[in-house]
Every structure is written in C-alpha cells, then in structure tokens.
Image (cartoon, rainbow, N blue to C red; front, side, top):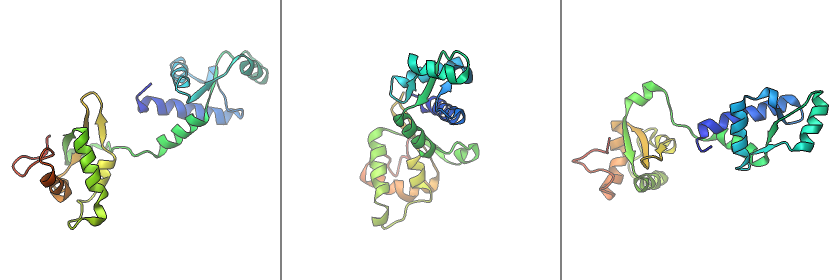
Length: 179
C-alpha cells in the first residue's frame, strides 16, 4: 500500500478498535475483509502486527469464541498514524482552488522554490501571502514527476518572480509559470 489516503484510515481503525477493546487488538469480526487485507500489507512494512497462533488462542479465551484474525499497530504504526494526523495537507476546498492557476514544477524547480521560501527573513521584498503555505502543502504527481501548486497572480509576482529572475527555467517575464 503506497497511497497514504488508503493507509491512514486502516491505521486509524486499528487504533480506535484496539483502544475500545482494551487489549489493543482489532478482531476479525470488527474489521472488513478488505481492511484485513490492507492490514496484512501494512504488516509487511512493519506498521501492523498480525496475531500469531498463541495470541489468537488467548484472544479466543477472552472473547469466548474462536478468533481467526487479529491485528494491532506496532510502535512504527503508531508513529505513522501520529505523523499522518499532523502532516500538512493541500487545501482541497473548490472555492480556493479555483482562485489560483494550477502550476506544475519539476522536482528541481520545487527544490529551488523551497530554498527561496527558506530565505524569508533575509529578503528585501516580502513573500506573497500564503505562498509558503502553498509550497508546504503542494502535491506531487509521481506519475508525471511534477509538483502541483495553486498560485494566484499575487503569488506569481510576490516572490516567485524574484526567484524566476535567478532561474529562467522556472519562468520569465515574457512567459508565465507553466500552467
């Protein structure tokens, strides 16, 4: 499982159901078969522990019924869940997304833009409002190896233009950023 949007709900469900159960395990009757399969895939990455025969036997005694499958988060899985809850997310509200143009940057351009943003305290002209936030929450389309940002005219002229003067591949005065 590589897509975080699929991983986080499985980790959340394992955590919540394990907390409710008291013993930390999520049992077969509490989890859909599809989620069990996802949990199995996450076990191969060390994020989830699948119950072995002895653990299932102990859980069967506690539950008063046969437990055929059980899983719980590993410490790495809890860390991944904590990060997932706090990680930056791109703003997906359609009203705000429609305000700016979608700009695609190759990885080296994005790296240059991040370096420029890191110089905020040293710049003579302040960055455009929310430009740093847009860069921080930009989404990468790994299929085409491009970073996608929503930039307004203010963003394009309030900071990105100065960077462009140093890096003509990012954009030039005669040609705007690649839409």
